[in-house]
Amino acid sequence: MPGTNPFIDFVSAFVKVSDEEIAEIERRIHHSSYPKNEVIQRQGEIARTLAFVIRGAVRIYYTDEGGNEQTVNFIFENQPMVAFDSFAGQTPSGIAAVTLEPTELIWTSHAEFFSFLELYPKYETAVRSVMGKYLVMGSEHFKLLRMNPPETAMRPSAAPGQN
Image (cartoon, rainbow, N blue to C red; front, side, top):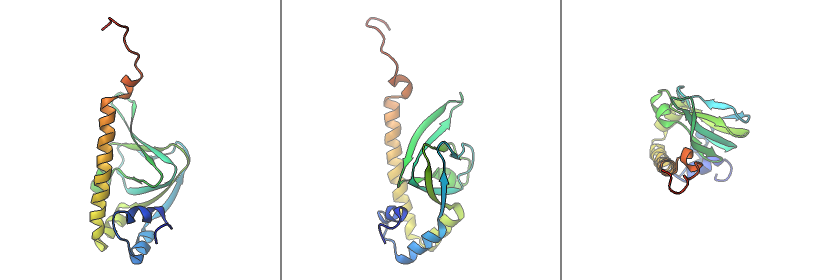
């Protein structure tokens, strides 16, 4: 039933979804709403949910040794949101997430997600495809940051003849 649920539409781009599977997915997802500037994942906490942004925007960041927040990504509508290494391994996350505007998420727990994969193993391939897509996007994002780090982007040029 494409078109009725943005998450089902997203999943359908990677794998054919049956009506039975849609019903099972819908049983395992929950809805949450957050106001602007709400921290929804803290650095150092274990990521216990895999989420999908229905409405709103989220900033992904970490706090460095000097106490400065370093933005690493933005998650917008119709995109997944998870610190997958933390979620999959149930280990502390190196990143945090905060809403940039009122945000609505749908989410599933670690147990619900992996029990779904046990019931429907074909989705493991879809998960790998999604991870691959977002790893490539993240890699490109980091390349751009390294080429033009924020602290140098705004720095005025030295006057001619000064080094």
